[in-house]
Image (cartoon, rainbow, N blue to C red; front, side, top):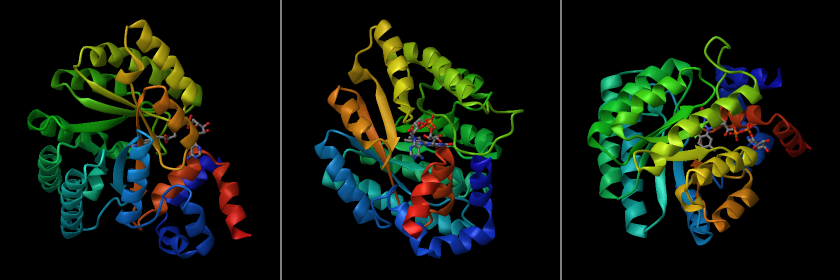
Length: 305
Ligand SMILES: Cc1cc2nc3c(=O)[nH]c(=O)nc-3n(C[C@H](O)[C@H](O)[C@H](O)COP(=O)(O)OP(=O)(O)OC[C@H]3O[C@@H](n4cnc5c(N)ncnc54)[C@H](O)[C@@H]3O)c2cc1C
Protein backbone atom coordinates (compact mmCIF):
# COMPACT_ATOMS: atom_id res chain seq x y z
CA UNK A 1 0.00 0.00 0.00
CA UNK A 2 2.78 2.41 0.90
CA UNK A 3 4.47 1.72 -2.44
CA UNK A 4 1.24 2.55 -4.32
CA UNK A 5 0.74 5.71 -2.24
CA UNK A 6 4.30 6.91 -2.93
CA UNK A 7 3.93 6.23 -6.67
CA UNK A 8 0.61 8.15 -6.63
CA UNK A 9 2.36 11.07 -4.87
CA UNK A 10 5.06 10.97 -7.60
CA UNK A 11 2.36 11.91 -10.17
CA UNK A 12 0.49 14.49 -8.07
CA UNK A 13 0.86 18.04 -9.49
CA UNK A 14 0.25 19.90 -6.18
CA UNK A 15 2.79 17.81 -4.29
CA UNK A 16 5.36 18.08 -7.09
CA UNK A 17 5.19 21.90 -6.85
CA UNK A 18 5.31 22.15 -3.06
CA UNK A 19 7.30 19.22 -1.62
CA UNK A 20 10.64 20.15 -3.31
CA UNK A 21 10.63 23.39 -1.27
CA UNK A 22 10.57 21.57 2.08
CA UNK A 23 14.00 21.67 3.70
CA UNK A 24 13.86 18.25 5.37
CA UNK A 25 12.98 16.58 2.05
CA UNK A 26 15.83 18.43 0.30
CA UNK A 27 18.20 17.17 3.00
CA UNK A 28 16.92 13.58 2.60
CA UNK A 29 17.39 13.67 -1.20
CA UNK A 30 21.14 14.26 -0.72
CA UNK A 31 21.43 10.59 0.16
CA UNK A 32 20.67 9.69 -3.47
CA UNK A 33 22.50 12.47 -5.33
CA UNK A 34 25.84 14.18 -4.70
CA UNK A 35 24.31 17.61 -5.45
CA UNK A 36 21.96 19.38 -7.83
CA UNK A 37 24.68 20.81 -10.12
CA UNK A 38 26.70 19.04 -12.80
CA UNK A 39 30.03 19.78 -11.08
CA UNK A 40 28.96 17.76 -8.03
CA UNK A 41 28.07 14.84 -10.35
CA UNK A 42 31.41 15.09 -12.20
CA UNK A 43 33.36 15.19 -8.93
CA UNK A 44 31.52 12.03 -7.83
CA UNK A 45 32.28 10.43 -11.22
CA UNK A 46 35.99 11.22 -10.70
CA UNK A 47 35.88 9.59 -7.24
CA UNK A 48 34.22 6.48 -8.68
CA UNK A 49 36.83 6.27 -11.43
CA UNK A 50 39.51 6.06 -8.74
CA UNK A 51 37.71 2.93 -7.41
CA UNK A 52 37.50 1.44 -10.94
CA UNK A 53 33.77 2.19 -11.06
CA UNK A 54 32.39 3.90 -14.18
CA UNK A 55 29.50 6.35 -14.21
CA UNK A 56 26.18 6.86 -15.89
CA UNK A 57 25.15 10.51 -15.73
CA UNK A 58 21.59 11.73 -15.89
CA UNK A 59 20.10 15.19 -15.42
CA UNK A 60 16.74 14.65 -13.80
CA UNK A 61 13.64 15.70 -15.70
CA UNK A 62 10.73 14.12 -17.54
CA UNK A 63 7.60 15.06 -19.51
CA UNK A 64 8.92 18.43 -20.73
CA UNK A 65 6.08 20.79 -21.63
CA UNK A 66 7.47 22.14 -24.91
CA UNK A 67 10.15 21.36 -27.47
CA UNK A 68 12.32 24.34 -26.53
CA UNK A 69 12.83 22.71 -23.11
CA UNK A 70 13.88 19.52 -24.92
CA UNK A 71 16.33 21.55 -27.07
CA UNK A 72 17.96 22.90 -23.95
CA UNK A 73 18.34 19.33 -22.61
CA UNK A 74 19.96 18.22 -25.90
CA UNK A 75 22.42 21.13 -25.81
CA UNK A 76 23.26 20.36 -22.18
CA UNK A 77 24.04 16.71 -22.97
CA UNK A 78 25.99 17.58 -26.13
CA UNK A 79 28.30 19.75 -24.08
CA UNK A 80 28.47 17.05 -21.39
CA UNK A 81 29.57 14.42 -23.94
CA UNK A 82 32.26 16.86 -25.12
CA UNK A 83 33.41 17.34 -21.53
CA UNK A 84 33.49 13.58 -20.86
CA UNK A 85 35.80 13.19 -23.87
CA UNK A 86 38.00 16.18 -22.96
CA UNK A 87 38.43 15.12 -19.28
CA UNK A 88 38.82 11.41 -20.11
CA UNK A 89 35.98 10.40 -17.78
CA UNK A 90 34.69 6.82 -17.76
CA UNK A 91 31.11 8.08 -18.14
CA UNK A 92 28.05 7.34 -20.23
CA UNK A 93 24.77 9.27 -20.35
CA UNK A 94 21.22 8.12 -19.74
CA UNK A 95 18.16 10.09 -20.88
CA UNK A 96 14.39 9.76 -20.50
CA UNK A 97 12.47 9.88 -23.81
CA UNK A 98 9.86 12.29 -22.42
CA UNK A 99 12.72 14.63 -21.44
CA UNK A 100 13.48 14.90 -25.17
CA UNK A 101 9.84 15.45 -26.17
CA UNK A 102 8.49 11.93 -26.84
CA UNK A 103 4.99 12.78 -25.62
CA UNK A 104 4.87 16.06 -27.61
CA UNK A 105 6.28 15.03 -30.98
CA UNK A 106 7.89 11.57 -31.49
CA UNK A 107 9.65 12.72 -34.69
CA UNK A 108 11.29 15.64 -32.86
CA UNK A 109 12.25 13.33 -29.98
CA UNK A 110 13.87 10.97 -32.49
CA UNK A 111 15.98 13.72 -34.03
CA UNK A 112 16.98 14.87 -30.53
CA UNK A 113 18.14 11.34 -29.73
CA UNK A 114 20.01 11.20 -33.05
CA UNK A 115 21.92 14.37 -32.14
CA UNK A 116 22.90 12.81 -28.82
CA UNK A 117 23.83 9.49 -30.46
CA UNK A 118 26.21 11.41 -32.76
CA UNK A 119 27.69 13.25 -29.77
CA UNK A 120 28.12 9.92 -27.91
CA UNK A 121 29.92 8.45 -30.89
CA UNK A 122 32.22 11.47 -31.26
CA UNK A 123 33.08 11.27 -27.53
CA UNK A 124 33.54 7.45 -27.77
CA UNK A 125 31.00 7.26 -24.97
CA UNK A 126 27.52 5.71 -24.92
CA UNK A 127 23.91 6.91 -24.90
CA UNK A 128 21.29 5.02 -22.89
CA UNK A 129 17.53 5.44 -23.27
CA UNK A 130 15.72 5.09 -19.94
CA UNK A 131 12.41 3.22 -19.93
CA UNK A 132 9.46 5.09 -18.42
CA UNK A 133 5.86 3.99 -17.64
CA UNK A 134 4.14 1.45 -19.92
CA UNK A 135 2.37 4.14 -22.00
CA UNK A 136 5.83 4.85 -23.48
CA UNK A 137 7.16 1.31 -23.92
CA UNK A 138 6.15 0.84 -27.56
CA UNK A 139 7.23 4.30 -28.83
CA UNK A 140 10.50 4.02 -26.88
CA UNK A 141 11.26 0.63 -28.45
CA UNK A 142 10.42 2.01 -31.93
CA UNK A 143 12.73 4.92 -31.31
CA UNK A 144 15.56 2.63 -30.20
CA UNK A 145 15.19 0.18 -33.12
CA UNK A 146 15.55 3.09 -35.57
CA UNK A 147 18.40 4.69 -33.66
CA UNK A 148 20.36 1.46 -33.27
CA UNK A 149 20.34 0.88 -37.05
CA UNK A 150 22.86 3.73 -37.50
CA UNK A 151 24.26 4.28 -34.01
CA UNK A 152 25.97 1.32 -32.30
CA UNK A 153 26.85 3.33 -29.18
CA UNK A 154 23.26 3.34 -27.98
CA UNK A 155 21.27 1.15 -25.61
CA UNK A 156 17.86 0.85 -23.98
CA UNK A 157 16.54 -0.06 -20.53
CA UNK A 158 14.02 -2.90 -20.41
CA UNK A 159 11.85 -3.75 -17.40
CA UNK A 160 11.65 -7.32 -16.08
CA UNK A 161 8.27 -6.67 -14.43
CA UNK A 162 6.49 -6.32 -17.80
CA UNK A 163 5.04 -9.51 -19.28
CA UNK A 164 5.95 -8.28 -22.78
CA UNK A 165 9.68 -7.89 -22.14
CA UNK A 166 10.64 -11.40 -23.23
CA UNK A 167 9.07 -10.72 -26.66
CA UNK A 168 10.77 -7.32 -26.81
CA UNK A 169 14.15 -8.93 -26.15
CA UNK A 170 13.60 -11.54 -28.86
CA UNK A 171 12.58 -8.82 -31.35
CA UNK A 172 15.60 -6.68 -30.48
CA UNK A 173 18.24 -9.42 -30.69
CA UNK A 174 18.75 -9.13 -34.49
CA UNK A 175 19.89 -5.48 -34.16
CA UNK A 176 22.71 -6.46 -31.71
CA UNK A 177 21.27 -4.26 -28.97
CA UNK A 178 22.65 -2.96 -25.70
CA UNK A 179 20.12 -3.78 -22.98
CA UNK A 180 20.15 -2.45 -19.42
CA UNK A 181 17.85 -4.81 -17.56
CA UNK A 182 15.97 -3.26 -14.61
CA UNK A 183 13.13 -4.64 -12.50
CA UNK A 184 10.91 -1.58 -13.20
CA UNK A 185 10.04 1.47 -11.11
CA UNK A 186 6.50 2.53 -12.11
CA UNK A 187 2.99 1.60 -10.95
CA UNK A 188 1.73 -0.95 -13.49
CA UNK A 189 -1.39 -3.08 -13.47
CA UNK A 190 -1.29 -6.84 -12.90
CA UNK A 191 -2.78 -7.31 -16.38
CA UNK A 192 0.54 -6.27 -17.96
CA UNK A 193 3.11 -6.66 -15.20
CA UNK A 194 4.27 -9.10 -12.54
CA UNK A 195 3.47 -7.48 -9.21
CA UNK A 196 4.97 -9.97 -6.73
CA UNK A 197 8.71 -9.53 -6.11
CA UNK A 198 9.36 -13.28 -6.50
CA UNK A 199 7.76 -13.26 -9.97
CA UNK A 200 9.71 -10.16 -11.07
CA UNK A 201 12.94 -11.77 -9.83
CA UNK A 202 12.12 -15.07 -11.62
CA UNK A 203 11.48 -13.17 -14.87
CA UNK A 204 14.70 -11.17 -14.43
CA UNK A 205 16.62 -14.44 -14.11
CA UNK A 206 14.84 -16.02 -17.09
CA UNK A 207 15.56 -12.96 -19.26
CA UNK A 208 19.24 -13.19 -18.31
CA UNK A 209 19.28 -16.91 -19.19
CA UNK A 210 17.98 -15.88 -22.61
CA UNK A 211 20.45 -13.01 -23.10
CA UNK A 212 23.70 -14.27 -21.58
CA UNK A 213 24.56 -16.72 -24.40
CA UNK A 214 24.11 -13.82 -26.85
CA UNK A 215 26.27 -11.57 -24.64
CA UNK A 216 28.96 -14.27 -24.54
CA UNK A 217 29.05 -14.31 -28.35
CA UNK A 218 29.36 -10.50 -28.47
CA UNK A 219 25.91 -10.11 -30.05
CA UNK A 220 24.51 -8.12 -27.14
CA UNK A 221 25.75 -5.78 -24.43
CA UNK A 222 23.90 -6.70 -21.25
CA UNK A 223 23.95 -4.52 -18.11
CA UNK A 224 22.42 -5.90 -14.91
CA UNK A 225 20.94 -2.73 -13.38
CA UNK A 226 19.88 -3.94 -9.96
CA UNK A 227 20.94 -3.68 -6.32
CA UNK A 228 19.79 -7.25 -5.74
CA UNK A 229 23.16 -8.83 -5.02
CA UNK A 230 21.69 -12.31 -4.46
CA UNK A 231 20.16 -12.18 -7.93
CA UNK A 232 23.47 -10.92 -9.38
CA UNK A 233 25.26 -13.86 -7.71
CA UNK A 234 22.79 -16.36 -9.25
CA UNK A 235 23.22 -14.76 -12.69
CA UNK A 236 27.01 -14.81 -12.28
CA UNK A 237 26.87 -18.55 -11.49
CA UNK A 238 24.85 -19.14 -14.64
CA UNK A 239 27.32 -17.02 -16.66
CA UNK A 240 30.27 -18.97 -15.28
CA UNK A 241 28.58 -22.22 -16.27
CA UNK A 242 28.51 -20.78 -19.80
CA UNK A 243 32.25 -20.08 -19.54
CA UNK A 244 32.00 -16.33 -18.94
CA UNK A 245 34.35 -14.50 -16.57
CA UNK A 246 33.37 -11.79 -14.03
CA UNK A 247 34.95 -9.23 -16.35
CA UNK A 248 32.35 -10.03 -19.00
CA UNK A 249 29.49 -9.12 -16.66
CA UNK A 250 28.32 -5.53 -16.23
CA UNK A 251 26.42 -4.32 -13.19
CA UNK A 252 24.91 -0.86 -12.60
CA UNK A 253 23.51 0.60 -9.39
CA UNK A 254 22.20 3.98 -8.31
CA UNK A 255 24.29 6.54 -6.44
CA UNK A 256 23.90 6.16 -2.67
CA UNK A 257 22.50 2.63 -2.76
CA UNK A 258 24.67 -0.33 -1.73
CA UNK A 259 27.94 1.56 -2.25
CA UNK A 260 29.77 -1.20 -0.35
CA UNK A 261 28.48 -3.82 -2.79
CA UNK A 262 29.42 -1.66 -5.79
CA UNK A 263 33.00 -1.49 -4.48
CA UNK A 264 33.06 -5.24 -3.72
CA UNK A 265 31.82 -6.20 -7.20
CA UNK A 266 34.42 -3.89 -8.79
CA UNK A 267 37.16 -5.52 -6.66
CA UNK A 268 35.96 -8.96 -7.78
CA UNK A 269 36.43 -7.94 -11.41
CA UNK A 270 32.85 -7.13 -12.51
CA UNK A 271 32.42 -4.06 -14.71
CA UNK A 272 30.52 -1.71 -12.38
CA UNK A 273 28.77 1.56 -13.16
CA UNK A 274 27.12 3.98 -10.75
CA UNK A 275 24.20 6.00 -12.06
CA UNK A 276 24.64 9.55 -10.78
CA UNK A 277 21.61 11.86 -10.99
CA UNK A 278 21.79 15.64 -10.75
CA UNK A 279 19.54 18.63 -11.42
CA UNK A 280 16.65 20.18 -9.54
CA UNK A 281 13.79 18.13 -11.07
CA UNK A 282 14.21 15.35 -8.54
CA UNK A 283 10.69 15.11 -7.06
CA UNK A 284 9.06 12.25 -9.06
CA UNK A 285 12.38 10.40 -9.34
CA UNK A 286 12.94 10.63 -5.57
CA UNK A 287 9.43 9.35 -4.79
CA UNK A 288 10.15 6.30 -6.99
CA UNK A 289 13.33 5.67 -4.93
CA UNK A 290 11.25 5.80 -1.72
CA UNK A 291 8.68 3.44 -3.24
CA UNK A 292 11.39 0.89 -4.03
CA UNK A 293 12.21 0.65 -0.35
CA UNK A 294 9.50 2.16 1.85
CA UNK A 295 11.92 1.96 4.83
CA UNK A 296 13.56 5.00 3.20
CA UNK A 297 10.54 7.02 4.35
CA UNK A 298 11.86 6.67 7.92
CA UNK A 299 15.06 8.34 6.77
CA UNK A 300 13.02 11.31 5.44
CA UNK A 301 11.13 11.48 8.73
CA UNK A 302 14.43 11.57 10.66
CA UNK A 303 15.48 14.66 8.62
CA UNK A 304 12.29 16.38 9.82
CA UNK A 305 13.41 16.07 13.45
C1 LIG B 1 21.38 1.78 -13.02
C2 LIG B 1 19.88 1.74 -12.90
C3 LIG B 1 19.10 2.26 -13.90
C4 LIG B 1 17.71 2.22 -13.80
N1 LIG B 1 16.94 2.65 -14.83
C5 LIG B 1 15.61 2.45 -14.80
C6 LIG B 1 14.79 2.72 -15.94
O1 LIG B 1 15.28 3.19 -16.99
N2 LIG B 1 13.45 2.47 -15.85
C7 LIG B 1 12.89 1.94 -14.71
O2 LIG B 1 11.68 1.69 -14.70
N3 LIG B 1 13.64 1.69 -13.61
C8 LIG B 1 14.97 1.93 -13.63
N4 LIG B 1 15.72 1.63 -12.54
C9 LIG B 1 15.05 1.30 -11.24
C10 LIG B 1 14.68 -0.17 -11.15
O3 LIG B 1 13.62 -0.47 -12.04
C11 LIG B 1 14.24 -0.57 -9.74
O4 LIG B 1 13.10 0.17 -9.39
C12 LIG B 1 15.31 -0.35 -8.67
O5 LIG B 1 16.57 -0.67 -9.14
C13 LIG B 1 15.01 -1.20 -7.43
O6 LIG B 1 15.00 -2.55 -7.75
P1 LIG B 1 16.26 -3.54 -7.54
O7 LIG B 1 16.56 -4.15 -8.84
O8 LIG B 1 17.39 -2.85 -6.92
O9 LIG B 1 15.69 -4.73 -6.64
P2 LIG B 1 14.91 -4.75 -5.27
O10 LIG B 1 14.49 -6.16 -5.08
O11 LIG B 1 13.87 -3.68 -5.22
O12 LIG B 1 16.03 -4.35 -4.23
C14 LIG B 1 17.08 -5.22 -3.85
C15 LIG B 1 17.76 -4.61 -2.64
O13 LIG B 1 18.43 -3.40 -3.01
C16 LIG B 1 18.27 -2.39 -2.04
N5 LIG B 1 17.50 -1.27 -2.60
C17 LIG B 1 16.78 -1.28 -3.76
N6 LIG B 1 16.23 -0.07 -3.98
C18 LIG B 1 16.59 0.72 -2.95
C19 LIG B 1 16.34 2.07 -2.59
N7 LIG B 1 15.61 2.87 -3.36
N8 LIG B 1 16.88 2.53 -1.45
C20 LIG B 1 17.63 1.73 -0.64
N9 LIG B 1 17.92 0.44 -0.93
C21 LIG B 1 17.40 -0.06 -2.04
C22 LIG B 1 17.53 -3.03 -0.89
O14 LIG B 1 18.49 -3.52 0.02
C23 LIG B 1 16.79 -4.17 -1.53
O15 LIG B 1 16.52 -5.22 -0.65
C24 LIG B 1 17.10 1.66 -12.62
C25 LIG B 1 17.91 1.12 -11.62
C26 LIG B 1 19.27 1.14 -11.74
C27 LIG B 1 20.09 0.53 -10.65
